[in-house]
Image (tube, rainbow, N blue to C red; front, side):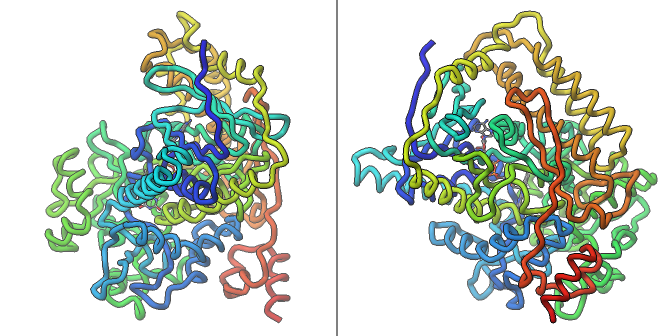
Length: 630
Ligand code: FAD
């Protein structure tokens, strides 16, 4: 069986914001770059991003700057963030947004013609650069246009538009290949024909996004099967923070066919309020102690904040997502939910209809089309939905390098930046900042190589045999059934609220599903066979789910996107402990070890006041703070 073979300097797996930005950088550094994506080019998850990209440009409130953004990000992540990543992100996000504008992005404007910025949960000032509620679409359009511009340049220079950057769309990577310890290439298949493809390349950038398809109720689309997380694990890299999953507070709950689809946080950022079945704005009852001085205590103050932020505190509907999701969960459990099992999100009584349609066109369209609800006239019903994974490949903050030489990661597949909880809007900016850095990191790694690594033929043969296995079995397990059971298990047992017995039960179930997945059969041949594709994706979803569950069982506290019913408080004992997952090359065994988070640099610590830090940090860290302040 012939295998199509290509040679590149850098292979970027994923064509969302992170992948495109990485590829642009690698090409700009003179590297021959392949972009491989399993979806159509342009249909990455990034396209669905609605609210905007967070960047402290200070266009709407001049008091905003990188230090305020850094503080907000660390608070949002409950101080478990890789602080160097949070620092780079806060400092570089504005440049990345301005760069996008220079490349042709058309952001909404302020009255005086600057890029407009909107409010979002956990951000002290209006900070999200946006294009209505279709920001991701504009981001992807602009980055794709930049790729095309570079290809036009290459056509002029080399007579071939694809001489230095080429897109391989609808092409799924199933294995990373190594030469000794180092990356040597990637193996995959064309989704349409089922034919195999091999990339010889010394550097691979993973930019494959998240893992949401391991859960039943999710805002994520079909390609979010944790492929990059699993590819990294199987290649010997490590994943951190896997227990932290963000359940976005507002997904659609009705009708059942659209359950989980996202209702953007911009609805609350632009004035929408949450009410229970008794009509009460219940978020005022759920402001945790660590945030008490930053949020309004009355509806009047919260409402005044939209027009006068200097003299009022923000409404609690704009608390970080983990807080709002847990509050909604509690209201529904207490019997104060909406008829279809969510709560009410109302913007109709808060803004004129024309303004709603102007600011939230996609939401208006989405509810009209999918639920026959006119959001300019009536409230929406919403509830938590699995949205984002904070955990991912452990990388060097400055270069995006993973622990395996030649492997890099950026975007949602990487871990550390967001700690235990991501603030809305911080993903799009993360993609741009760390996509660029990973592209640059990969290019300089290639520059430093004395010789190119070589793919071993036995590794290619193994990858091919692994990929063909589900086609060669008959009468085995149905991959759709295994998938459905995994989704149900994760949703019910490792969901928004966790307990030791349930997570242990999930681990036993995942173990059995792993065994069943080795017997899946996908009749129908190699040509566009979605059952086969799913059978291959299952390996990844199961591995990643196991990491999530193992880490969730070990972390005996509640922090950000990890809530333990049996350990409901944030614990100082866990404050600096990171959980790091690794796996054997066949994925059969996953192990988790603890790592102590490095102390924050003194000048960054000094950006906070002691009273606030004392809510999060250990005594040792506070002593370091005192020494810096002396
Ligand atoms: P993606 O954009 O998902 O790209 C992943 C790419 O990897 C795709 O091209 C996919 O085809 C490819 N891929 C995956 N596996 C393989 C494989 N095995 N082989 C080859 N290719 C593969 N964040 C914000 O900051 N602001 C927002 O307003 C916002 N709104 C959101 C709204 C919705 C509905 C959702 C779901 C998310 C939102 N987010 C938002 C989060 C944000 O959109 C994502 O975290 C981000 O887009 C992820 O980008 P990425 O580049 O890491 O991955």
